[in-house]
Length: 470
Image (tube, rainbow, N blue to C red; front, side):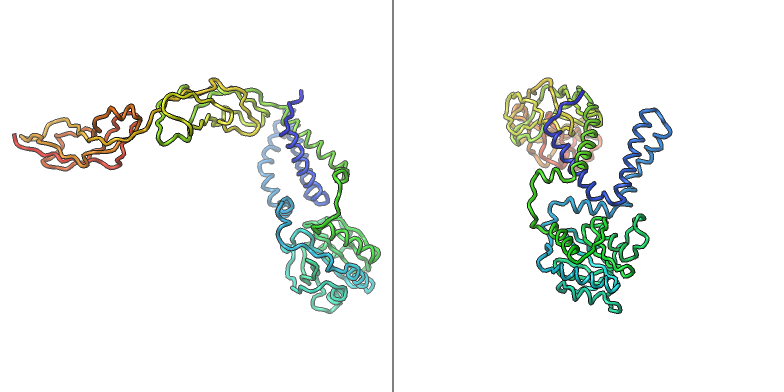
Protein backbone atom coordinates (compact mmCIF):
# COMPACT_ATOMS: atom_id res chain seq x y z
CA UNK A 1 0.00 0.00 0.00
CA UNK A 2 1.46 3.33 -1.09
CA UNK A 3 1.92 5.99 1.57
CA UNK A 4 0.17 9.32 1.55
CA UNK A 5 2.26 11.69 -0.60
CA UNK A 6 2.63 15.20 0.80
CA UNK A 7 3.83 18.29 -1.12
CA UNK A 8 7.00 18.05 0.97
CA UNK A 9 7.58 14.54 -0.40
CA UNK A 10 7.34 15.76 -3.99
CA UNK A 11 9.82 18.53 -3.24
CA UNK A 12 12.05 15.97 -1.52
CA UNK A 13 12.08 13.71 -4.61
CA UNK A 14 12.74 16.63 -6.99
CA UNK A 15 15.63 18.04 -4.94
CA UNK A 16 17.32 14.65 -4.54
CA UNK A 17 16.84 13.89 -8.26
CA UNK A 18 18.53 17.16 -9.23
CA UNK A 19 21.43 16.56 -6.83
CA UNK A 20 21.97 12.96 -7.94
CA UNK A 21 21.80 13.90 -11.64
CA UNK A 22 24.28 16.74 -11.15
CA UNK A 23 26.73 14.42 -9.41
CA UNK A 24 26.28 11.88 -12.21
CA UNK A 25 26.84 14.46 -14.96
CA UNK A 26 30.00 15.76 -13.28
CA UNK A 27 31.61 12.40 -12.57
CA UNK A 28 30.21 10.14 -15.33
CA UNK A 29 33.56 9.98 -17.13
CA UNK A 30 35.73 9.57 -14.06
CA UNK A 31 36.69 6.62 -11.90
CA UNK A 32 34.82 8.21 -9.00
CA UNK A 33 31.51 7.13 -10.56
CA UNK A 34 32.78 3.57 -11.00
CA UNK A 35 33.76 3.42 -7.33
CA UNK A 36 30.36 4.80 -6.27
CA UNK A 37 28.61 2.15 -8.38
CA UNK A 38 30.78 -0.49 -6.74
CA UNK A 39 29.83 0.78 -3.29
CA UNK A 40 26.15 0.81 -4.30
CA UNK A 41 26.48 -2.82 -5.39
CA UNK A 42 27.98 -3.72 -2.01
CA UNK A 43 25.08 -1.94 -0.25
CA UNK A 44 22.53 -3.90 -2.29
CA UNK A 45 24.44 -7.12 -1.62
CA UNK A 46 24.39 -6.34 2.12
CA UNK A 47 20.61 -5.86 2.14
CA UNK A 48 20.07 -9.07 0.18
CA UNK A 49 22.36 -11.16 2.40
CA UNK A 50 20.78 -9.73 5.53
CA UNK A 51 17.28 -10.55 4.24
CA UNK A 52 18.30 -14.11 3.33
CA UNK A 53 19.91 -14.66 6.73
CA UNK A 54 23.52 -15.01 5.50
CA UNK A 55 24.97 -13.92 8.81
CA UNK A 56 28.70 -14.14 8.06
CA UNK A 57 28.53 -12.27 4.73
CA UNK A 58 26.19 -9.58 6.06
CA UNK A 59 28.38 -9.14 9.17
CA UNK A 60 31.52 -8.66 7.05
CA UNK A 61 29.78 -6.15 4.77
CA UNK A 62 28.40 -4.30 7.79
CA UNK A 63 31.88 -3.99 9.35
CA UNK A 64 33.23 -2.85 5.99
CA UNK A 65 30.60 -0.13 5.85
CA UNK A 66 31.88 1.46 9.06
CA UNK A 67 35.10 2.56 7.35
CA UNK A 68 33.87 3.13 3.81
CA UNK A 69 33.06 6.82 4.38
CA UNK A 70 36.55 7.52 5.70
CA UNK A 71 38.02 5.76 2.67
CA UNK A 72 35.83 7.83 0.33
CA UNK A 73 36.94 11.11 1.93
CA UNK A 74 40.63 10.17 1.77
CA UNK A 75 40.59 8.85 -1.81
CA UNK A 76 38.19 11.35 -3.37
CA UNK A 77 39.02 14.52 -1.46
CA UNK A 78 39.68 16.39 -4.73
CA UNK A 79 36.38 15.27 -6.28
CA UNK A 80 34.48 16.13 -3.08
CA UNK A 81 36.00 19.61 -2.96
CA UNK A 82 35.16 20.08 -6.64
CA UNK A 83 31.54 18.99 -6.10
CA UNK A 84 31.11 21.34 -3.13
CA UNK A 85 32.47 24.21 -5.18
CA UNK A 86 30.07 23.47 -8.01
CA UNK A 87 27.13 23.32 -5.58
CA UNK A 88 27.98 26.80 -4.27
CA UNK A 89 25.32 29.27 -5.41
CA UNK A 90 27.60 32.27 -4.76
CA UNK A 91 30.65 31.17 -6.72
CA UNK A 92 29.67 33.23 -9.77
CA UNK A 93 29.69 36.45 -7.72
CA UNK A 94 33.39 36.25 -6.86
CA UNK A 95 36.29 36.85 -9.18
CA UNK A 96 36.37 38.08 -12.73
CA UNK A 97 34.64 36.38 -15.61
CA UNK A 98 36.66 35.58 -18.69
CA UNK A 99 36.31 38.10 -21.53
CA UNK A 100 35.82 36.08 -24.70
CA UNK A 101 35.98 39.18 -26.90
CA UNK A 102 39.67 39.70 -26.00
CA UNK A 103 40.56 36.30 -27.48
CA UNK A 104 41.16 35.84 -31.20
CA UNK A 105 40.45 32.12 -31.11
CA UNK A 106 40.94 31.73 -34.83
CA UNK A 107 44.44 33.20 -34.59
CA UNK A 108 45.28 30.95 -31.62
CA UNK A 109 43.90 27.88 -33.45
CA UNK A 110 45.94 28.70 -36.57
CA UNK A 111 49.08 29.05 -34.44
CA UNK A 112 48.50 25.64 -32.82
CA UNK A 113 48.00 23.93 -36.18
CA UNK A 114 51.15 25.67 -37.42
CA UNK A 115 53.02 24.12 -34.48
CA UNK A 116 51.49 20.75 -35.35
CA UNK A 117 52.69 21.05 -38.94
CA UNK A 118 56.20 21.75 -37.63
CA UNK A 119 55.94 18.77 -35.25
CA UNK A 120 56.33 21.06 -32.23
CA UNK A 121 54.54 19.97 -29.08
CA UNK A 122 52.26 22.36 -27.18
CA UNK A 123 49.71 22.37 -24.38
CA UNK A 124 47.27 25.29 -23.93
CA UNK A 125 44.75 25.39 -21.08
CA UNK A 126 41.68 27.66 -21.04
CA UNK A 127 40.21 28.35 -17.60
CA UNK A 128 36.42 28.59 -17.51
CA UNK A 129 34.26 29.07 -14.40
CA UNK A 130 36.16 26.95 -11.89
CA UNK A 131 39.49 28.23 -10.50
CA UNK A 132 42.37 25.83 -11.27
CA UNK A 133 45.25 27.53 -9.47
CA UNK A 134 45.59 24.60 -7.06
CA UNK A 135 46.46 22.28 -9.97
CA UNK A 136 49.16 24.55 -11.47
CA UNK A 137 52.74 24.23 -10.26
CA UNK A 138 56.02 26.01 -11.08
CA UNK A 139 54.38 28.33 -13.60
CA UNK A 140 55.95 31.61 -14.77
CA UNK A 141 53.65 34.63 -14.50
CA UNK A 142 53.19 36.56 -17.75
CA UNK A 143 49.81 38.40 -17.80
CA UNK A 144 50.05 39.20 -21.50
CA UNK A 145 47.56 39.58 -24.32
CA UNK A 146 46.69 36.20 -25.80
CA UNK A 147 47.81 36.01 -29.42
CA UNK A 148 48.92 33.35 -31.86
CA UNK A 149 52.41 34.76 -32.27
CA UNK A 150 53.04 34.77 -28.51
CA UNK A 151 51.88 31.17 -28.13
CA UNK A 152 53.93 30.03 -31.12
CA UNK A 153 56.99 31.75 -29.69
CA UNK A 154 56.57 30.21 -26.23
CA UNK A 155 56.48 26.63 -27.60
CA UNK A 156 59.38 26.98 -30.06
CA UNK A 157 62.04 24.41 -29.27
CA UNK A 158 64.86 25.86 -27.25
CA UNK A 159 62.87 28.71 -25.64
CA UNK A 160 62.98 28.82 -21.81
CA UNK A 161 59.21 28.38 -21.42
CA UNK A 162 58.44 25.75 -24.07
CA UNK A 163 58.24 22.87 -21.58
CA UNK A 164 54.89 22.83 -19.77
CA UNK A 165 51.43 24.31 -20.27
CA UNK A 166 50.25 27.82 -21.09
CA UNK A 167 47.27 29.07 -19.06
CA UNK A 168 44.81 31.46 -20.72
CA UNK A 169 42.65 33.10 -18.08
CA UNK A 170 40.30 36.08 -18.29
CA UNK A 171 41.26 36.58 -21.94
CA UNK A 172 45.00 36.84 -21.23
CA UNK A 173 48.02 34.55 -21.08
CA UNK A 174 48.35 34.29 -17.30
CA UNK A 175 51.17 31.72 -16.90
CA UNK A 176 53.54 29.61 -18.95
CA UNK A 177 55.64 26.52 -18.27
CA UNK A 178 53.02 25.17 -15.83
CA UNK A 179 53.15 21.61 -14.52
CA UNK A 180 49.77 19.86 -14.37
CA UNK A 181 48.55 16.71 -12.56
CA UNK A 182 48.73 13.61 -14.74
CA UNK A 183 45.70 11.48 -15.51
CA UNK A 184 45.56 8.07 -13.86
CA UNK A 185 43.13 6.70 -16.43
CA UNK A 186 44.53 3.35 -17.60
CA UNK A 187 42.20 3.32 -20.62
CA UNK A 188 43.99 6.16 -22.42
CA UNK A 189 45.74 5.25 -25.70
CA UNK A 190 49.32 4.11 -25.22
CA UNK A 191 50.70 6.66 -27.64
CA UNK A 192 49.53 9.51 -25.36
CA UNK A 193 52.61 10.98 -23.72
CA UNK A 194 53.11 13.19 -20.67
CA UNK A 195 51.69 16.28 -22.40
CA UNK A 196 48.39 14.58 -23.22
CA UNK A 197 48.09 12.92 -19.80
CA UNK A 198 48.70 16.29 -18.13
CA UNK A 199 45.97 18.02 -20.14
CA UNK A 200 43.50 15.17 -19.57
CA UNK A 201 44.41 15.03 -15.88
CA UNK A 202 43.45 18.70 -15.49
CA UNK A 203 40.09 18.46 -17.30
CA UNK A 204 39.22 15.38 -15.21
CA UNK A 205 39.53 17.54 -12.07
CA UNK A 206 37.93 20.79 -13.33
CA UNK A 207 35.81 22.31 -16.08
CA UNK A 208 38.86 23.68 -17.91
CA UNK A 209 39.52 23.07 -21.62
CA UNK A 210 42.91 21.76 -22.79
CA UNK A 211 44.34 21.69 -26.32
CA UNK A 212 47.31 19.38 -26.92
CA UNK A 213 49.62 19.34 -29.95
CA UNK A 214 51.53 16.12 -30.53
CA UNK A 215 55.09 16.50 -31.82
CA UNK A 216 55.31 12.82 -32.85
CA UNK A 217 52.08 12.66 -34.92
CA UNK A 218 51.43 16.33 -35.68
CA UNK A 219 47.86 16.04 -34.34
CA UNK A 220 45.76 18.55 -32.42
CA UNK A 221 43.59 17.08 -29.66
CA UNK A 222 40.98 18.82 -27.48
CA UNK A 223 40.04 17.58 -24.00
CA UNK A 224 37.09 18.70 -21.89
CA UNK A 225 35.22 17.01 -19.00
CA UNK A 226 37.43 13.94 -19.32
CA UNK A 227 36.48 13.42 -22.98
CA UNK A 228 39.03 13.55 -25.80
CA UNK A 229 38.45 14.48 -29.43
CA UNK A 230 40.75 14.96 -32.38
CA UNK A 231 40.40 18.26 -34.27
CA UNK A 232 41.11 18.34 -38.01
CA UNK A 233 41.31 22.05 -38.85
CA UNK A 234 41.83 25.50 -37.28
CA UNK A 235 38.24 26.40 -38.13
CA UNK A 236 36.88 23.37 -36.24
CA UNK A 237 39.08 24.09 -33.24
CA UNK A 238 38.05 27.77 -33.19
CA UNK A 239 34.37 26.82 -33.37
CA UNK A 240 34.69 24.28 -30.55
CA UNK A 241 36.59 26.71 -28.31
CA UNK A 242 34.06 29.46 -29.02
CA UNK A 243 31.20 27.21 -27.96
CA UNK A 244 32.95 25.91 -24.86
CA UNK A 245 34.19 29.29 -23.63
CA UNK A 246 30.87 30.98 -24.43
CA UNK A 247 29.08 28.39 -22.26
CA UNK A 248 31.26 29.54 -19.34
CA UNK A 249 30.40 33.19 -19.89
CA UNK A 250 27.67 34.74 -17.71
CA UNK A 251 25.77 35.73 -20.87
CA UNK A 252 24.53 32.56 -22.53
CA UNK A 253 21.90 31.79 -25.09
CA UNK A 254 18.49 31.35 -23.51
CA UNK A 255 17.22 27.79 -23.38
CA UNK A 256 13.58 26.85 -22.94
CA UNK A 257 12.40 24.70 -20.05
CA UNK A 258 11.33 22.00 -22.51
CA UNK A 259 14.80 21.85 -24.08
CA UNK A 260 16.42 21.55 -20.66
CA UNK A 261 14.11 18.72 -19.64
CA UNK A 262 14.56 16.77 -22.89
CA UNK A 263 18.35 17.14 -22.96
CA UNK A 264 19.90 13.88 -21.70
CA UNK A 265 16.35 12.62 -21.25
CA UNK A 266 16.97 8.96 -20.41
CA UNK A 267 19.71 9.57 -17.78
CA UNK A 268 17.30 11.98 -16.10
CA UNK A 269 14.48 9.43 -16.21
CA UNK A 270 16.73 6.76 -14.68
CA UNK A 271 17.86 9.20 -11.96
CA UNK A 272 14.28 10.11 -11.02
CA UNK A 273 13.36 6.41 -11.00
CA UNK A 274 16.21 5.51 -8.65
CA UNK A 275 15.34 8.36 -6.28
CA UNK A 276 11.64 7.42 -6.37
CA UNK A 277 12.42 3.79 -5.55
CA UNK A 278 14.62 4.86 -2.63
CA UNK A 279 11.86 7.15 -1.36
CA UNK A 280 9.30 4.35 -1.58
CA UNK A 281 11.59 1.99 0.33
CA UNK A 282 11.87 4.58 3.10
CA UNK A 283 8.28 5.85 3.08
CA UNK A 284 6.39 2.56 2.71
CA UNK A 285 8.00 1.19 5.88
CA UNK A 286 6.14 3.55 8.13
CA UNK A 287 6.78 3.47 11.83
CA UNK A 288 3.05 3.71 12.57
CA UNK A 289 1.26 5.52 15.39
CA UNK A 290 2.96 5.72 18.79
CA UNK A 291 1.57 7.03 22.10
CA UNK A 292 4.02 8.51 24.59
CA UNK A 293 3.73 10.36 27.88
CA UNK A 294 5.72 13.59 27.86
CA UNK A 295 6.29 16.14 30.65
CA UNK A 296 5.14 19.75 30.48
CA UNK A 297 7.72 22.52 30.71
CA UNK A 298 7.34 26.29 30.58
CA UNK A 299 9.31 29.25 29.27
CA UNK A 300 8.99 33.06 29.05
CA UNK A 301 7.42 33.39 32.50
CA UNK A 302 6.82 37.15 33.16
CA UNK A 303 9.07 38.71 35.80
CA UNK A 304 6.15 39.94 37.90
CA UNK A 305 4.35 36.57 38.10
CA UNK A 306 5.06 33.43 40.14
CA UNK A 307 3.93 30.01 38.92
CA UNK A 308 2.25 28.22 41.81
CA UNK A 309 0.89 25.02 40.27
CA UNK A 310 0.07 23.42 36.94
CA UNK A 311 -2.37 20.57 36.31
CA UNK A 312 -1.58 18.13 34.75
CA UNK A 313 2.19 17.79 34.90
CA UNK A 314 2.41 15.55 31.82
CA UNK A 315 0.23 14.71 28.82
CA UNK A 316 -0.42 11.73 26.57
CA UNK A 317 0.69 12.49 22.99
CA UNK A 318 -0.13 10.40 19.94
CA UNK A 319 2.57 10.63 17.25
CA UNK A 320 2.53 9.48 13.64
CA UNK A 321 5.97 8.25 12.50
CA UNK A 322 6.35 8.24 8.70
CA UNK A 323 9.33 5.88 8.53
CA UNK A 324 10.86 3.17 10.66
CA UNK A 325 14.27 4.68 9.86
CA UNK A 326 13.41 7.41 12.37
CA UNK A 327 14.32 6.60 15.99
CA UNK A 328 11.38 5.64 18.18
CA UNK A 329 9.82 8.65 19.93
CA UNK A 330 10.15 6.71 23.19
CA UNK A 331 13.92 7.06 22.82
CA UNK A 332 13.75 10.82 22.28
CA UNK A 333 13.62 13.55 24.92
CA UNK A 334 10.25 15.02 23.91
CA UNK A 335 8.58 17.68 26.06
CA UNK A 336 5.63 20.03 25.76
CA UNK A 337 7.29 23.44 26.08
CA UNK A 338 4.54 26.03 26.66
CA UNK A 339 5.01 29.78 26.28
CA UNK A 340 3.87 31.76 29.37
CA UNK A 341 4.60 35.23 28.00
CA UNK A 342 0.91 36.29 28.39
CA UNK A 343 0.33 34.65 31.77
CA UNK A 344 -1.29 36.80 34.51
CA UNK A 345 -2.14 36.22 38.17
CA UNK A 346 -5.03 33.91 38.91
CA UNK A 347 -6.11 30.71 37.18
CA UNK A 348 -5.59 30.30 33.42
CA UNK A 349 -6.30 27.55 30.92
CA UNK A 350 -3.64 27.38 28.22
CA UNK A 351 -4.04 25.16 25.14
CA UNK A 352 -1.30 22.66 24.27
CA UNK A 353 -0.54 23.11 20.57
CA UNK A 354 1.47 21.00 18.14
CA UNK A 355 3.98 23.86 17.91
CA UNK A 356 4.85 23.28 21.57
CA UNK A 357 6.60 19.99 20.68
CA UNK A 358 10.06 19.86 19.10
CA UNK A 359 10.01 16.74 16.96
CA UNK A 360 12.41 15.26 14.37
CA UNK A 361 11.52 15.30 10.68
CA UNK A 362 9.01 12.63 9.78
CA UNK A 363 7.18 12.73 13.14
CA UNK A 364 3.93 14.67 13.58
CA UNK A 365 1.47 15.10 16.47
CA UNK A 366 -1.99 13.67 15.80
CA UNK A 367 -3.61 14.19 19.25
CA UNK A 368 -2.86 15.47 22.76
CA UNK A 369 -4.77 14.40 25.90
CA UNK A 370 -5.61 16.56 27.73
CA UNK A 371 -5.48 19.38 25.20
CA UNK A 372 -4.96 22.16 27.78
CA UNK A 373 -3.21 22.79 31.08
CA UNK A 374 -4.61 24.65 34.11
CA UNK A 375 -2.10 27.08 35.62
CA UNK A 376 -2.36 28.84 38.99
CA UNK A 377 -0.22 31.97 39.23
CA UNK A 378 0.22 34.77 41.74
CA UNK A 379 1.65 38.25 41.70
CA UNK A 380 5.33 38.48 42.68
CA UNK A 381 6.14 40.97 45.49
CA UNK A 382 9.20 41.90 47.52
CA UNK A 383 9.30 42.73 51.26
CA UNK A 384 11.82 43.59 53.96
CA UNK A 385 11.66 41.20 56.93
CA UNK A 386 13.55 41.12 60.18
CA UNK A 387 15.97 38.29 60.92
CA UNK A 388 15.10 36.00 63.82
CA UNK A 389 17.69 33.82 65.50
CA UNK A 390 16.82 30.23 66.40
CA UNK A 391 18.77 28.90 69.38
CA UNK A 392 18.86 25.74 71.42
CA UNK A 393 20.99 24.35 74.27
CA UNK A 394 22.58 26.26 77.20
CA UNK A 395 25.71 28.35 77.65
CA UNK A 396 28.60 26.82 79.51
CA UNK A 397 29.12 27.89 83.16
CA UNK A 398 26.94 30.41 84.93
CA UNK A 399 26.47 32.67 81.89
CA UNK A 400 23.12 33.46 80.42
CA UNK A 401 22.07 35.04 77.13
CA UNK A 402 21.49 38.73 77.55
CA UNK A 403 20.75 39.40 73.88
CA UNK A 404 21.91 38.40 70.40
CA UNK A 405 23.11 41.11 68.04
CA UNK A 406 22.29 40.31 64.37
CA UNK A 407 24.03 41.80 61.32
CA UNK A 408 22.20 42.61 59.13
CA UNK A 409 18.96 43.06 61.02
CA UNK A 410 16.69 43.06 57.95
CA UNK A 411 16.68 41.10 54.69
CA UNK A 412 14.64 41.23 51.46
CA UNK A 413 12.47 38.32 50.34
CA UNK A 414 10.63 37.76 47.07
CA UNK A 415 7.78 35.43 46.19
CA UNK A 416 4.02 35.03 45.73
CA UNK A 417 1.99 37.86 47.28
CA UNK A 418 -0.35 35.41 49.05
CA UNK A 419 2.61 33.87 50.89
CA UNK A 420 5.02 36.80 51.40
CA UNK A 421 2.31 39.03 52.85
CA UNK A 422 1.82 36.60 55.78
CA UNK A 423 5.48 36.30 56.73
CA UNK A 424 6.83 38.09 59.81
CA UNK A 425 10.51 37.13 59.92
CA UNK A 426 13.27 35.06 58.34
CA UNK A 427 14.93 32.59 60.67
CA UNK A 428 18.55 31.48 60.76
CA UNK A 429 19.61 27.90 61.00
CA UNK A 430 19.55 26.72 64.65
CA UNK A 431 22.48 27.85 66.83
CA UNK A 432 23.78 25.57 69.58
CA UNK A 433 24.59 27.78 72.61
CA UNK A 434 26.76 25.08 74.15
CA UNK A 435 29.27 25.59 71.32
CA UNK A 436 29.39 29.39 71.70
CA UNK A 437 32.04 31.10 73.79
CA UNK A 438 31.60 34.38 75.60
CA UNK A 439 30.98 37.33 73.26
CA UNK A 440 31.95 35.18 70.27
CA UNK A 441 30.77 36.19 66.76
CA UNK A 442 29.44 33.26 64.72
CA UNK A 443 27.94 33.03 61.22
CA UNK A 444 24.76 31.17 60.34
CA UNK A 445 22.94 30.84 56.99
CA UNK A 446 19.33 31.88 56.56
CA UNK A 447 16.52 29.43 55.99
CA UNK A 448 13.89 29.78 53.29
CA UNK A 449 10.79 31.05 55.13
CA UNK A 450 8.29 29.29 52.84
CA UNK A 451 8.17 27.35 49.56
CA UNK A 452 8.61 29.49 46.40
CA UNK A 453 9.96 32.38 48.53
CA UNK A 454 13.53 33.46 47.81
CA UNK A 455 15.78 35.24 50.27
CA UNK A 456 17.69 37.96 48.42
CA UNK A 457 20.84 37.66 50.51
CA UNK A 458 23.75 35.44 49.47
CA UNK A 459 25.97 35.72 52.52
CA UNK A 460 25.65 34.41 56.07
CA UNK A 461 24.29 36.35 59.02
CA UNK A 462 26.75 37.38 61.76
CA UNK A 463 25.51 36.62 65.28
CA UNK A 464 27.14 38.04 68.42
CA UNK A 465 25.90 36.39 71.63
CA UNK A 466 26.11 38.91 74.47
CA UNK A 467 26.10 37.16 77.86
CA UNK A 468 25.89 38.10 81.54
CA UNK A 469 26.52 36.29 84.77
CA UNK A 470 23.61 34.83 86.64
